[in-house]
Image (cartoon, rainbow, N blue to C red):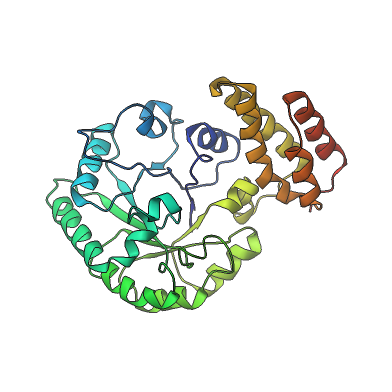
Length: 317
């Protein structure tokens, strides 16, 4: 089974990915947060800093992701990625639920324009098929914008093209990350998709993983927030011991050091570590209390005290 690390904007950038790969690993592919090519000749500076080859740990298998609703922008961006050395797979973002993205008819917002989607894919695949070494084009999608009933027609569009993988997060855009994944929609895809499927959504424990793989004969599982909360989850799925208190301690110390190198101020560093602890607190019995303790800290000294309090006195689940 291939285990894929889903992208999460502002969190799973190269600093985080590199440390996770060195410290835990267990992941077959890391997917980068999306880049969004525009009318400009090429992407520069901070637009592509996260995926620059020199910023990646040796051996880390990174898959870039493009967010666009214009085939000419996508192709321009893909050409630049190929020049950078990304000649295997490029992922297409059709799932981002962010309001600013959806308002531009991108990400999951593009799912309401089936005719536009069809034309977009047609032109991309026509270009890709003409390459001497065609790319593997995968797509990450939601099942609709407002209603799960939208998915039947959306899947018809996907079935017209040969994606290397169709990664399905079975929620609509309006659900964001609330409620439970719609397994009826995934079942429909399992029975009717012409493409290889990957499941994504609410894989937070080994038991969650087993529920999917015991029911569906698929090659890949994508995990996002579950791996951020438990960075050892991929290894636990493969049979390793559960995440330990010492691993959490060492991991947060290394993250602190790495983020300190690139943060412009103590305030930025503190906010970044608070974001980290929002997820890591899930490993403790009193998650709410642990989150509150970290959230209330106003400086790095108080942050260190709060971390020590949690690591020394809070019970792991």
